[in-house]
Image (tube, rainbow over the protein chains, first blue to last red):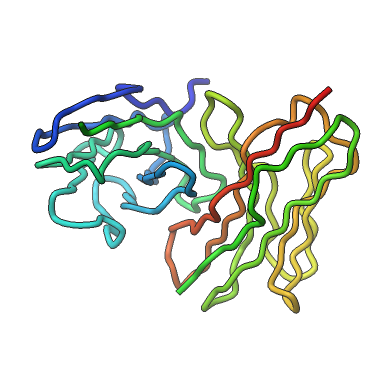
Length: 113
Length: 113
């Protein structure tokens, strides 16, 4: 079956612009996670959804970052007033409710010029 | 808080050489431990895991043993192949951190024929 997909695969934007990154989880996976991976670093947790609600958003770095999952499937990570420091690969993962194992998507590489 | 420390890379080996990638952790709870692998152009994949002390996780010839006394989870393989070239991430999760995974910085492995 299909794995986790993320679109776009690459996004280049200018400082100050707004971007949306999309994640399509594996069908039937109620848990969805967003991570951010900067160059040469391991992924860092951003937010976790169980169904439609954000069960843990403590990893979001500031209020410019927001994520939604209105129907409990597709999720969108939204970044307002982008900054050069937001440049990274944004990873999405999904799992069954017990969280194990987690299946990761290929990521969206965001570049803020 | 939780943290994971991996040996610095990159690591370059010849085919059939023995591999060790060191991983140590700090956790407030009693964590589960994981190794993830990221092949070029692909998403993170779970390689193996261990959920309690002295457990050994194994997959594809790789092994790692959960050592509570040394807070370590070193990855080993007796004979590496060119196809093992990838970035390897050590990670942990525990009940105190909810569903988040804490990752190490990753170790780039290159295996030459």
